[in-house]
Length: 221
Length: 370
Image 1 (cartoon, rainbow over the protein chains, first blue to last red):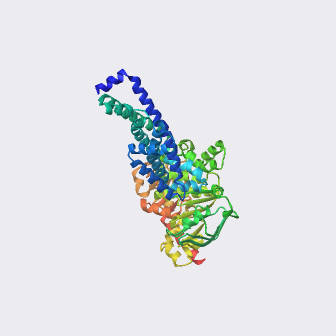
Image 2: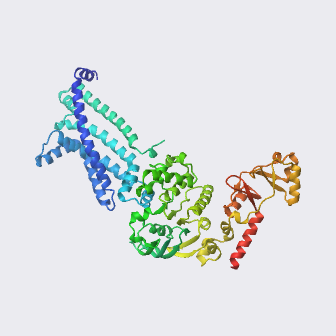
Image 3: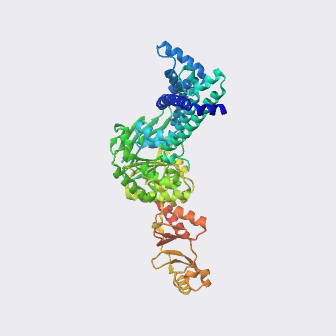
């Protein structure tokens, strides 16, 4: 513990650098994962897409079960065969997007499917088009569940992003793995605690965002 | 005007939910679709705004074949109030009411004005409620907003699917009365679905009784009660149709004006009036004719002025209450007489057991001799 503190006091710019790398990595990954997950999640709730939905959700679940190390390895193979860089930022972002999909996708899908049929019928009965129904009724009512999925995904990705250091993407995984290799307990602790603090802070921030985007009438009193 | 011409709904699996149903609802009429669950009444209603696609026959809305009207256009021109309220919880009361006007692209100022008017129409203070969320309202208030929302863009036709289903009986009766009063003002063409025969008789200008997808009898409530077409109708109406007939009579048709006394008069004057009228009670009013309470002969000795011996009662009815409800209130509160007042609590009349019995005999005899 003390070692980690001393290191931090001595080289604060080091930790700042790793943290920024980490943040940059997950910000890009999460931004893409959110857009992809929500768009696909909405798409598969469409009429007659039950089979597509089953397949997509099944795939997302399988991807979640692949150990992160193995996924990084797998991505190296795939990207390599496409002639792209196999180490660094790109494969790391792709891996994180893949991991973020399940909670976002599944929650978006379940939330929209779970909207009270009476609400949908009321909207349709008053003459809303499918598009209006989605944006005026289904999505606003689905916000709380979708947000829960997002928070889940973000905390998950902050943890997994540490492993991305192994393929040269930098971030807070760097001190952890360096510490492991060189038996430097202070570095391991410093990296580990920083990742935890980052996850906690982000989750708190997200709970504020959640409160902000949840329609007023749906808030618990 | 709504006209159904041999309307049929067959589901892909072959189930015939509605079979060749034909009837016509005149403009300004309230038509109740009545029947046991699974009889096809809701399906029939939902075919009118094409929430359920029609598979045979035709529906004409003001003379136009409904299938030729754009689906969303059609629905925006027909008010829709559904079971279990169906208000959007994420929208304020005002936004809920403005749903259809906003879909139709009305300017914001016009929409808000309309929402305020409609809230007042259903008896709610617009200033207090317009920015509230449905979760902040009582069940009865939600139903009122539901009706206001259905009237949003001033449609000429309303579809109401058990709109007063999910509330306690006392509130339901009040909402029914209020709605009938509103209907007298707005004169919409209404299809009203219910499984409650009392509600059907009370609300309907016409009742369409359905059974297993078929229309059994389409008639006035009185004819349904007193001239049932067949055994099914008779059974559905029930053996107590005399009692149900009370739903057809409103207080104003039969009430009488009671003997009164003012609170400031002496008990002697009250006693004299009782003797004169041959009763042992009087209704106490103030100078404006406001109802204050009762005075009973047995109580006269307990004071010198009428106001000292008055017994108050908060149980009153209005001229538009149906006799059936008056009777049930009288029985449940152990009253011999029911005072009829207007909104300002001004005495308008009285209903007694005698009056109810007489009205019932007359109505039954008249119907059966017709």
